[in-house]
Amino acid sequence: MKKKIIVMGLMSLMLCGCGKVSKLSNGDDAVVSFDDDSKISINSLYDEMKDRYAVAILIDMIDEEILNKVYKDELSDATDYAKETVKALKANYDSEDEFLNAINSYYGYSTIEEFEDYLKLNHLRDLATEDYAKNQITDKQIESYYESDVVGDIEASQILITVDVKDDATEDEKTEAEEKAKKQAEDIIKKLDDGEDFSKLAKEYSKDDTTKDNGGALEKFNKGDYEETFTDAAYKLKVNEYTKEPVKTSNGYYIILKTKEYDKASLEDSKEKIIEDLSNELIENDRTISITALTELRKEKGMNIEDDKLKSQYNKYINTLYNYYMTTQSE
Image (cartoon, rainbow, N blue to C red; front, side):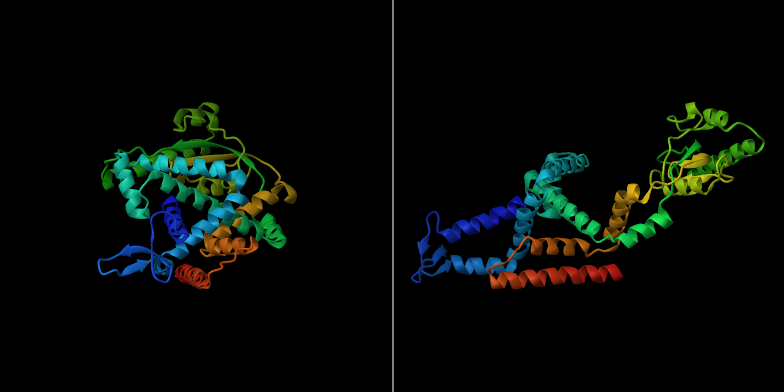
């Protein structure tokens, strides 16, 4: 971002005639001269730059101008996000020089500050997209989602059997470890079938150190709080019923005992969460939504590109982006 702004800034300085600049006979500033007295004018340079580079740079400048005002209360968080992202990415490289080479290769930025500005702007763009998506959600959608997808919290206890395998294990060793873990979980279920106490079995066998000492008991939870396969299995159970087959997750195999269920919250109390869920779904399924969101925000803020050529290029650029994402979305 900063690099792009600097380019535009230099263009502005040249157009203003600041510094040592020679003049052509027609009054234009010259930026390059030759021994035969021929020159390249600032206007011809500007026209070339405008044709080739200006639109993308201009859009960044427009969005920065708008979003810094719309999300002025979130600017600090956006800055923190950019710095934390850079910190996390740098951890993957052996040196800062290696990291700088990577961001220069992938993004075209030569300093960390430039890259942070880019990340900050994109974070603000994400906020604008999220707000736009939320505004597209209708009351009818909210009510339908509430009836079909909102459920009350439940409580459950768990016994986790992990798949113990070394990082350098062969495929045969991984398969053997997987089968061993599943067999142990199945054996525990047989013990439950024979009337043994779930809590005692959790304390003896569970590999989840955070819950085993209290018999595997979890605090109340809802869909989305844990891995989908785990919550789906838990919600299908009746109270005081346990899973008859081990539930496979990325952590290993679970045996789940459902211990309590609650009535679901009211529509009013659920509304904010429903809007968030539906808007996230909309963003995930519509690749063009960020283009639409930012285009509409620019219009809302009265953006008017005074230069007719740049205006035409802007419209072409937006249409090209939109058509590209529409095509890839349908694939």
